[in-house]
Length: 346
Ligand SMILES: Cc1cc2nc3c(=O)[nH]c(=O)nc-3n(C[C@H](O)[C@H](O)[C@H](O)COP(=O)(O)OP(=O)(O)OC[C@H]3O[C@@H](n4cnc5c(N)ncnc54)[C@H](O)[C@@H]3O)c2cc1C
Ligand code: SF4
Image (cartoon, rainbow, N blue to C red; front, side, top):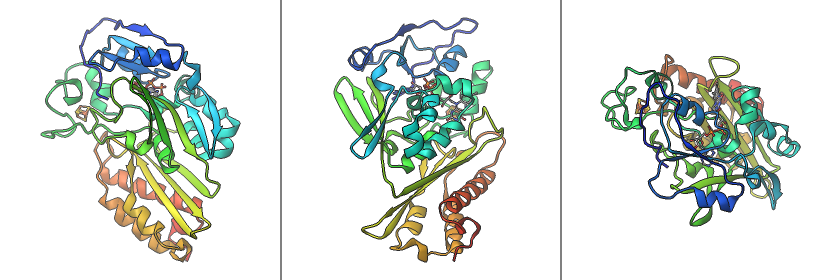
């Protein structure tokens, strides 16, 4: 999905046509699959700020708040289904989600502030646009040439770069990917389901793989009693601040095969959440992970994090970010398996 086109109208409050479908079929009929200029709004805590600041200016805003069919928490066969328009505050207060997916609740609790979580939706967080200080904070104030993401032909972050290096900073995607979540997508051509991991493209301009005319309708998380997941993040301020980096680690014990499978997913590095597959392999592929010593885990973390590609943003260096990822990863591993995070546990 590409961002709506940008037309700057300084000094004016942007006007747009607000469309509020009442159900899924109404939603599918109003989301255009052509080139028209529209944007989907869950809670609007990100989109409406951008419209207000003239970052972009869609002609149509399609709100999901009246579509009750996608505000549910529902048990299916071995899965928990969470409607895309469910508010983050409702995710946090849901007994079922708290019991089954405590790591998701803990990630939601870290997002923004109680007021924002009362508005913001899980679908909006999953589909949150990658952030860039120029695009999100500075350019709207004026004085900068339009960058690629605004239809220009340069990037202020990577001079001479040919892509957009905005950074995915949303808190729930790493946890949901670590939990093997899928998303259901509704569109004029029907319904489809993909792994959440496949929803993302590492391109700040065109970061979602859904097509025009499509909307994420629900997140489907498999329930696995043998899986534990933790999410840790670092932000400059304790509250009302995006993560600089966030790391989700999950481990699942499959009794029949006597294996442990790990997933490690990092937010804050690139335009999409980053899965550390080679680290997962080096730790998780062993038939019995408990043979692995804490010092080996530590070494593997150091080696693999050093290899990570990292988009630079703000005053913090990539070196700092990588050091923080290492720290969060060790802490996560330690929470899952005592001793590993401090290089012990042999
Ligand atoms: C002060 C402040 C602090 C913040 N701190 C954090 C933080 O710590 N962590 C964090 O992750 N976020 C943070 N945010 C960003 C934002 O509030 C959250 O990510 C929130 O969850 C977005 O949800 P929303 O429903 O409001 O999204 P919206 O603004 O409605 O939408 C966000 C994006 O998702 C798209 N979208 C929404 N729903 C769907 C759907 N069902 N299908 C397809 N596309 C959809 C929209 O088109 C838009 O591109 C912060 C925002 C502010 C203003
Ligand atoms: S990273 Fe993307 S949004 Fe930021 S200046 Fe470069 S092109 Fe624009």
